[in-house]
Length: 348
Image (cartoon, rainbow, N blue to C red):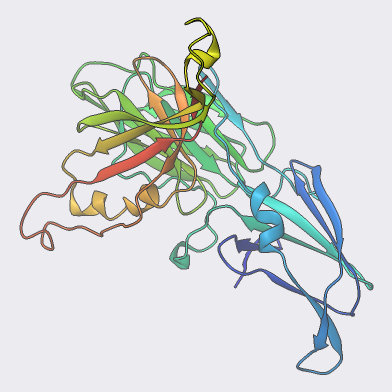
């Protein structure tokens, strides 16, 4: 089942994308990202009889394009936008976080694209403004991030006051961001809004909070293909897992202590994986109902507000429980989030 956006079939990457060529024989596949040709190749497939008669060639595209479908976070100092347009025929008009692939058989060519992450719940339809925040809590120093598919810009507001308008100049897919610096006003909480202009429009509400003591913010691609964030208000435990590979040499008493042979066992490689065990604050049933967008995301970043570092991460949990106050036996709801930094450190 494909979602059609702007007239082009869009397939979730977790589905088998099987293309049936109209005529048997070689099939050429071209993969594009940001109008840049990533791969081209010719596939020789076995032909089989088609249900309506004749012969066709079948190609499973998933395994070819999967390595190229990876959204990335591109933030600046204060505000801006980044896009991920990759349609060769109509640049700037197709959705984010995908690759275009063009298949050519003996008779004609066909355009398709595949999403890196797309909801398996199609209830929202062909949406164009993609934020789906868990609780909307925003703190000083983090980035506010919104993704739109067909707008010309996003305006960030505090109450009725415009904080910034980030425009891309022409309608198309983009992720807009604004660093939340200097938002503080009177009161412990400020109402924030992000509104997409142009296209089909859209608006989403957030809330800046003064009294939140948080060090980490998690940015992630939700199940609809847009970037969201979640402030970690519970405790966070950081640990390192060390993996070592060693080698041995024959020890000799005739060699001095400074010689490598004076150590029979030596470390060849030492890799360090940093792990975060993060705990959320108490969530309402409504907020908890959206946690699956984060726990199941394949594109996650951790922002350390103390150091300013934004690091790619990988969720390591394998199970998501849909918690409510009732099914937890009348207890308040919280989650534990386990993730590893996606880049291992090395010491040699």
